[in-house]
Amino acid sequence: MSKTTPPVQKNEIIHVTITDLSHQGAGVAKHEGYTLFIPKALPGETCEVKVTKTSKGYGFARLIHIHEPSSDRTEAPCPIYNTCGGCQLQHMTYEGQLRYKQKQVSDALERLGGITDVPVHPTLGMDHPWRYRNKSQVPVGERDGKVIAGFYQERSHRIVDMQECIIQNEHNDEIVQKVKDLANHYGIRGYDEEKHRGTLRHVVVRYGRQSGELMVVFVTRDEALPNKKNLIEDIRKAFPAVKSIVQNINPKRTNVIFGDKTKVLWGEEYIYDSIGAIKFAISARSFYQVNPEQTKVLYDKTLEYANLTGSETVIDAYCGIGTISLFLAQQAKHVYGVEIVPEAISDAKRNAELNGLTNTDFAVGEAENVIPWWAAQGIRPDVFVVDPPRKGCDEKLLNTMLEMKPKRIVYVSCNPATLARDLKVLEEGGYKTKQVQPVDMFPQSTHVECISQLILKEGN
Image (cartoon, rainbow, N blue to C red; front, top):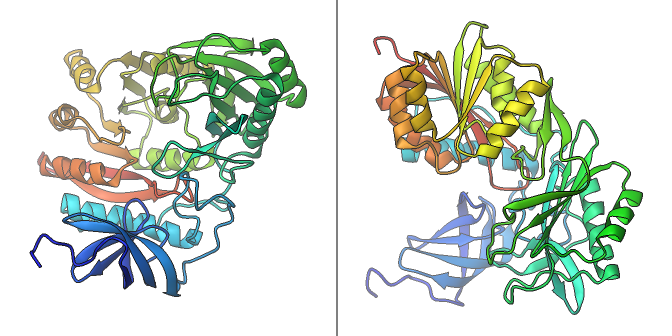
């Protein structure tokens, strides 16, 4: 057998011991030195598996039988867990999930960043890690002449029709079911992705956890929405807490949910919610964290790591609608926020005004271009806060931070791999990572957020 030929073949049944979890939540096993990924398997388990796919470096297998289950194994409570691709870890106890996420961050820092001497604290989890999501984005289709709505099957665009999703707020579930019933009643066709026809593409429901206000968004293929008047009346009658009913038109052949045009069909353009003392206006397309309870935990820790006394100038790169900026503004002298999305900056300015915070400035543009311009105006930050997308910080932004030499950097990350890469650059540029705090924003999934505190070393 050549070195490039795997020691297993497709459909072969073998026995393995699971040694780890991948960042996607699959069990990891070695068979004659060859790596296999086995969804739904947990570390410590000895299993019988069937090989489903092989490539030169690794393969995939399906769990057939567990000989010795892990003490972290539990029964998944969701009836469609094995077909829906929304959650990956319901078969793992919540305590096990929190340990796994802490290890995921530690392993990334060590393996990808060469950072071994930094405390990674235990993951901050939830008392009740269910029903936490305040926003549903549910694709709509048709099967056997009936409108269906649910989530995509794992690694596919086949909709798994659902009655409820136990990580979604109950109100969101109820509205999605009602819209599905009304669509069938009024003859509103679900969207056919392959043929690019039908009316209703997605139903989006947003819920203000503190305010109790609800927004319903119909994403349609074109402007026509049959029986619109009846649809609105029936939703209002069934759900008095609905304050806003909106239509978004997306005529493109695309996987992107929203189109460019949005119009209010009834009620307000915004609903409101609060995180701590800060109030937010939320529109149909606003970015707003889907787990407000854990967002408060995340932002409180960000504030703690920023260590503000009231005299500091802070720059918040990738500021979005100003969520972190406004938290920081409660304790900073002045906060400057920058974000590339113009609508987000409009929301940030509106939210600052809503909260009576006058010590903020927000600018549209790429952080790596706007921040040097601020520096040219004499703005010198004491603290930098970054909360980049999954791809991490732009290299030019990292260099800008190193040139500006703030006393502290607080790095909020949703991707341990790019965090590790960027921390390595910042450490090589004169900073020391003092501590890292994982926060579980998405229980039952593999995703983990974390906050890192960096201090400028003496002599830099």
